[in-house]
Image (tube, rainbow, N blue to C red; front, side, top):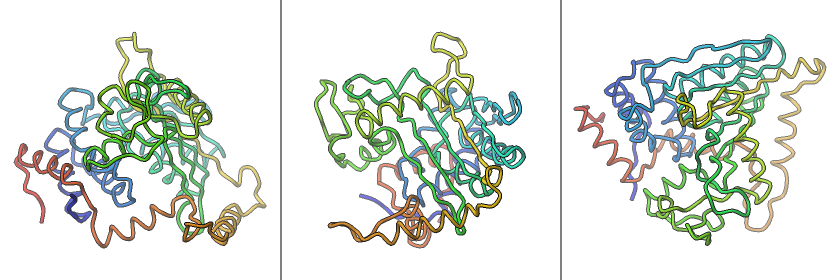
Amino acid sequence: MTRIIHAEPLEKLCREIFRAVGAPADIAAVVAESLVQTNLMGHDSHGVLRVKQYVTMIETGMIKPEQRPRLRKRFGATAMVTGGYGFGQVGARYAAELAAEMGGEHGIAAVSLGQSTHVGRLGEYTAMIAAAGLISIGFTSGTMYSGWVTPYGGRERTFGTNPMSFALPCAEGTLLLDFATAGIAHGKMVLAQAKGAPLPSGMLLDKAGRPSTDASILDDGAVLLPMGAHKGSGLAMMMEIIPTLLAGHRPISSPEFHFGNPTLLIALAPAAFDEETDFVQHVDALKRRVKAVKPAAGFAEVLTPGEPEARSYTERAEAGIPLPDAVWADLRALADEYAITIPE
């Protein structure tokens, strides 16, 4: 079962919960806004479902809610940012703003984010860079030492779900692609568990290596499969290596090791490559061409990347966000624990 909660009171509730567990007001606002915006876009796996997880991580010392990101190193058009194991959304926004600034200055920039906890929806940060008129590419890993995803042909957990994202500036909004290199993101598994819903086939193996659609077995030795068979497996491996090492992550044997989401954001200024090409006009022309393609049997229309999210945002901003009863119960329990009045 689900209940409908509107964005504004939901964001206020999340903000108050994060303040109650030690986050300064501005940091609590950033994280709450990020989670609720993600719900509005239809990605409930990375929305307020995460509030309870984050509170638990704060209580166990894995997230330091008061920490702010800082510039660790800058060399030419590259930079390293450290999040200090604060909220990942705060560190990732800082890194995205820096990448946009440096990309505009140099025509190209690459910014890594280390000491980062869960960053949330990777596309949020590539979209920020695209909003500044730049092409953006983002990679996020699972630290090379833990994960849910097995390599193609295997049945042992090896990779994180390791998303990648691309964002391009358009005349209106952003052309945004954001996906896990697993067949399904781990958060979507958690959401399916909360709903008591089955998974699509081809996403999961049980601990004996047999295909399953039962989301409840994930904590019983099951593994996620990579998307696209061997191709997704190869992408997952590249995503595991590149952002992790460029963010300065330490091996699991090091006392400095910490699980998290090392991230790499790349920004490219189209005018730095060809001043005479109107990049935005060409992107919009391709979007129109794709939208004009006749739909195949069983499809009403052809959708471009980011279009489902934009439609969800419009619908949910008006009608409200559907939350599984289990997620709402977690939020209510946290409100009771910290004596927070639930907004109307």
